[in-house]
Image (tube, rainbow, N blue to C red; front, top):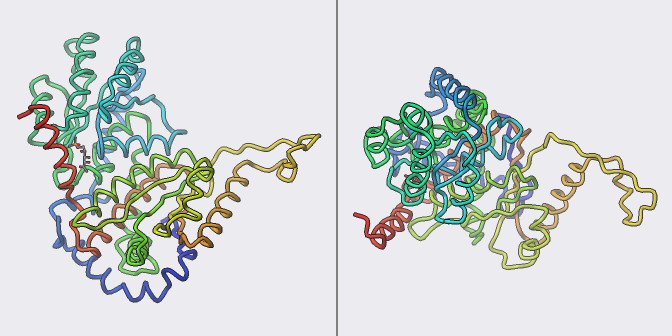
Length: 424
Ligand code: PA5
């Protein structure tokens, strides 16, 4: 496993002896999860998904990807929550690998946004992927209705059928019926995997393969993490160590976890993480509020609150050790800004100093922090990261005795929405 978790800056809040103290509870959670005996165990299909994913399926997605790219200028990906955020997070993380532009729809109810998108698509060759596990969620259903009409005006017959792909429940739901009636291609979402755990199912794999991402490497990384994260050892298993650290911090009234990033390409990974942790832990009156900050911009606004506000937070830095792109800072003859001290250095060096300075300042300000180090921006690392967080939140949920795999609160909003809209 290439990603690393550094917990040194938790000292005084969570120490080695605490990890030893909690290991019995973690072992219990581990047993419940691995034997599929814990709460919500019918939704633990993600657990061995990487090792069970067949290479021939990955090859099929890659083949479809090649064919779509040959006759499309862009892909429109319709979906919300677990059917949206992971795809976007992956593509921003892997921006350098992307071969086809991807537009998003169905993740809001903004008429202005969709109108602008339709204008943009007017002269383009478009392929549409619509993703909804339930097939009934309001936002993607309405975006699909509007975009389907647009596609029907642009294409017909076999061409139209070729350009619309549906990813949904294998047996039921409105989207499945629409696809069946119209003859669109469909791909099933594993019934034992919830939306926020679905990035390594066709939900994520197919759109990513169409965009040109090496999904074989993504799954390879996830397989490595699956192996690493199945060991019941809090010194070795980073997913369990992360869950245990958060458990202690929450007991010390650290009720907010801030994920801080220093690279634009990590901003949406934090969004994905927020859904995974917020929806999994936030129930039965419990839950750490997952927030995210985009540094260094946010150091000049919310940095103040972190340094000196209410001490109810801890911080997790997500850092890429080799950000890839280098940019040298030029020498300036006049040196009026006094920054010739870094002339000739890579801008990434300054960013690294910003991380060090922030981590030190925040821990001195009584915001304990830990760092997840990613070696680089590639698909294998990303696969490791996704599985690491999934395994961690599952253990965390069991440590807190909540069902980490349901989302009754989200369903409550959906039901109220249907009632207001008069939908049966
Ligand atoms: O965690 C979840 O499952 C939800 O947040 C869903 O991802 C979101 O509501 C979209 O649901 P669906 O894919 O069924 O349209």
